[in-house]
Amino acid sequence: LAVILALSFLVKRRRLHRSCCNGVPGLLSPANFLEEESSRGPAVAVFSILFSSLCQLVLDKEPLPLASPSSHGAREYWKILALLYYPAFYFPLLACATSRHRLGYLAGSLLAWGHCLVHVWQKVECPQSPKIHRLYSLLSHVPTLLSLLLLSLWYPALLGRSLRGNGPEQEIPGSRYYRKYLKAVLSKRGRKGSSAPIEESLQSRIRSYLRSYIYAPEEGFRIPLKLVVSLAMAVIAIYQVALLLLVAFVPTIQIIRAGMTKDIVVLLVQFGLVPSDNPAVPGDMEKELRTVRHYLWSLEGAFPPESLPRSNLRALYQGSVLDVFSEPRSLRPSRSAVVCWMSFASFQAAFACLGKGIRDESRFFFGMKRPFPGFCPVFRRGFVPISSKAIWFGLAGVWPSHGVFGAPRRRALYIVTFLLFPTNVLLGVLAGVWRVVISGLYNAVHFCRLDISLLQRGVETFDPGYHSYCHFLKVEVSQGHPLMKAFCFLLLQRPELPALPRDTRLEEG
Image 1 (cartoon, rainbow, N blue to C red):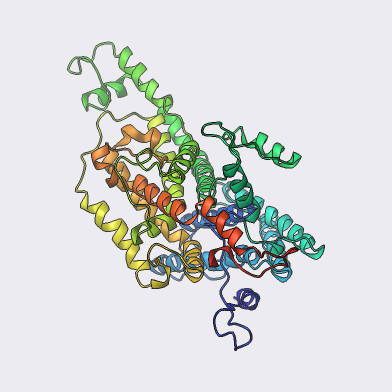
Image 2 (cartoon, rainbow, N blue to C red):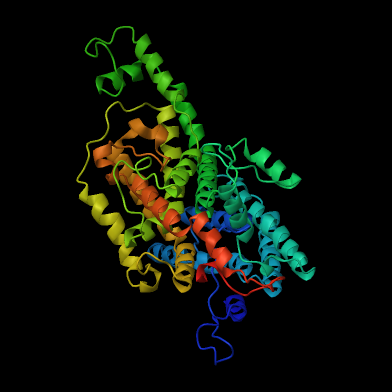
């Protein structure tokens, strides 16, 4: 809290009460999610720490580090309090970078070193824990330790660049990318659907080559920060769930699978869980046994790909709405769209946790041939959005005014998005349970993919994952179009040369 209050004086709102100390202090933003910042590693690192803390919170008997609940009933209230404690606790670790000041980088370095040393000291003193497995506590903290190590190296590097006089605070955030994107768009030479090649340094070429193993890079286009965070959360979620299954459930499941005999297959056939040509007469059951073994190993686990979201964003940038959606839709963000955008990464992490567990259970047991009956869609229409809006409705400063986010509204949006990330993960678990109900285990392979609907075209909006993804695209396209940002950057530039460093933000244009 002291760090946040101290750094708030570095980002004075100069348009508010300029006569009073040249502007009033303002609260730092954790990350500019709708802007193209140069570095995305710190945002991914802090969200990884936050999500790993949430995973520990669910299983730990002591939710808060310096206090222990007196009874089992009080423990649940402590866990609810911890949902707000951990985002506020790790908030300065990411917000120090948005101040774009060397004092902020110094504070970030001290915080990162402090957190890293405390975690390393705890694991060195107590490497083994009796909880679940003796090595589970150590292995579950691996993402946290790696993220803190990244921040411990990144903040001193920024501080060194700032002291040498070539820090990032001398230019508008993302201006280099907007300039490249505008150059790529305006320098087309007759090649349909492609732009002129952009000169890249050796470092950028090496980075593009390494990224080509994950996705095919395209010139003049960068994946939005929110999508990068959601993909990273999916990977961390799969790691945490796989680790939990490995140390807690895999030994038991191996015993069950080793005992999968014909007698058990006959029982599954009689209950209709395994297809058979003649269930009334058990017979040899060799075919049914092969069917069970096929379902035990056929479902492959994979984290959600990013190729389809990227192509959808490019299509919406070009105005091809019908290439993405099944019907014409307005791209102006609504209140429900803002709520879905804020909870997109949380839903992705929650769905990845549930999807990993479902796929592993399906792999070791059986595949359902019939989906569960679809319950009343009012549950999805009523519970998830209304329960979410009940939290945000009092935050009137977050909603866009006539489809446009001003600088204070964006800052409030970023802060609320970070602070309520754990709460949105729990809401995503509820939405994931509803997704299981409406789609059935038959679609377990594609459960983690929010970019496709598990329902047919006529009722695809009842899928909470796809519903959140569509609104995420709306907000990204309406508020983060690179071409619009490029022209705003040109308008913010001064005509005289050389231009002095300006203390302004792109969203204020």
